[in-house]
Image 1 (cartoon, helix red, strand yellow):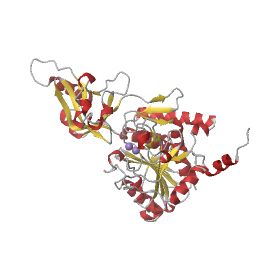
Image 2 (cartoon, helix red, strand yellow):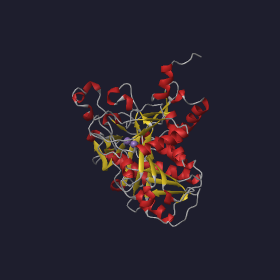
Image 3 (tube, helix red, strand yellow):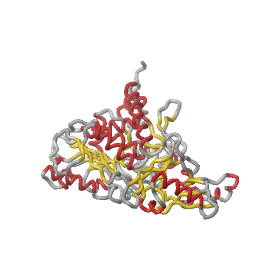
Image 4 (cartoon, helix red, strand yellow):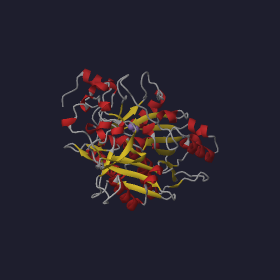
Length: 467
Ligand code: MN
Ligand code: MN
């Protein structure tokens, strides 16, 4: 081997350079990452809404000895509990050797993803088609949601108070739904619209049927026929839509992307690509030093408001319950706690290089992204992690061979985005964003690197197990 020149040696010692993880990890580690992603892919295929994710995590937790959280109980090191908030948010806890009075270690991910919600009175007939009106949930590019197969998920509370769970369009042989778009031949006027108005909110109408109920008289027979089918299937009438939560999501399964199978394409990586690894890290955590808490929350995509979102007090109340058990005040626990806000960041896309600043952007395959600050226009709205806390996370990750990088969401003044970080930091908890870089974020088909998904798991686990 040729000897390195002085400048090469000096560069190695002094410069910050981030390599592709595939050049750092050995064959076994790459294989472990690919294996880990098989579990992740199965999870994504089975869980397309926050409720489905919540019930998945509860079922997996129960298999691993987690019990429903009892605020009156005194927990010992190694005991495991789960708390479910209104079937949409989950808190997984592994009690540590130290008292909760010493603070806890939190990973906070969200299990809601951008999608289309049915309006409250959704079903109508137009020109002998039956359609659903929708209101999109989260930030989407609306035009991406037309002409792709959609499935319908959710819950209907019937007049008598009983509930019906809905999932249609996922299994082989089940029908799916679609939002139609205009053919290019007749789209000359539409094509003149700006991209954000290419498809407008009130044009996100979902085709759900076209065959009329056979009758000599009556109007809206296609709609009537759909209601007849819904009544037979779900025992519902039209007014039961008024007390329902029904969500349309892409109906296709996830798959590997690329000849080398290095990436996973599918719906809902944001933020299940952090939720799954953080839950798995909590599951694999035995008797940590500090109590490990994985929060899998709802409502991040609409701003974290509401009683299943992290702007509400449900999580704070849980920490106060832990404090009471430890004989201290909630604020004593929060002040000493640490949190990884586990959420995705934008991966650098060579097709759209201008929106990111390359020296401070995150890249697929270069490990999990630690984002010191979010916000926009002068960092407005960021919690901005301290240098001290960045230093601590850096030592934890480096000490556990976790490959990580930094990443700012976009150029200065290009746009920006927020996470739950600030809501947790506002509780007086040291918090920083850590997550997986994603391509085509918020589209029906997002893409992540398998090696990064595995690094998320390793990173959250190292954080939970840190002294
Ligand atoms: Mn997110
Ligand atoms: Mn998002």
